[in-house]
Length: 319
Image (cartoon, rainbow, N blue to C red):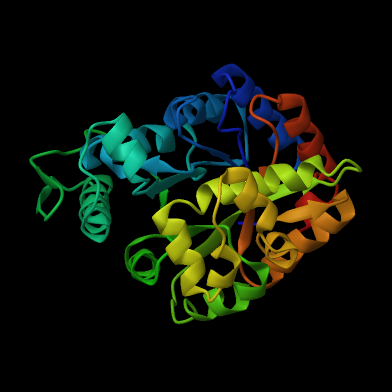
């Protein structure tokens, strides 16, 4: 995948606005548009509309939780999208969090590696035209067969933080999606996946904010980071990279956000003028990780999203 991708807003963004932003991203030269799925819109619906409204940009989901749909339904949805936009679809999957899976959807959370292995195996069976026949620890499927197999198989990406999930991604998926990746550790992460001989894309979400005199961008990025680092998976991810010192703070969200070391904040996110942001994104790409830009904005501030999207667009196609 050439260039950089961009993640559509995942908070307080009507689906119609998300589609319009995706169309504009293609016009600006972004190589991929990824639709998130949290509690604003259904990612697959947005991708389906974009499939008909765009011509060349790659389209993906980032990230659809495995527990909210059966593997057979995920395969059918991926096949549908691939028929609408052949060669342009990426299926980004992940295990999500306990709050979302157990609290919002009433499903059992856990057995992460088993769920990923089972789901991808069933999806692969279906997308290859086979009749499913799989009995796993977490998911089972027998007798399902796609009536229409897509001419080009969609690429499967796995949201991966821990070493076990990264290893599983390297074995079963076409790429992985990291989150809060320190640029200082990019070489290390790429080297851990260097023995993969087939095409395998290494991507990461990158929080990007254009600096401002009042420091609002810095505060917003810090607050978002602090909220994520309260989640066990993200704390474990940073601890595994030797960055646990950055997390040794206590207090409410604003207190923790304010105490995050500046070097750490600037290593994990990108804050600066457009030229500085572009240069740091390029650093990741050169090290072997494709950035997915996540504009750091206040919830629902789509004008701010567009400003960041346009500010970074100069030279995007050349990255």
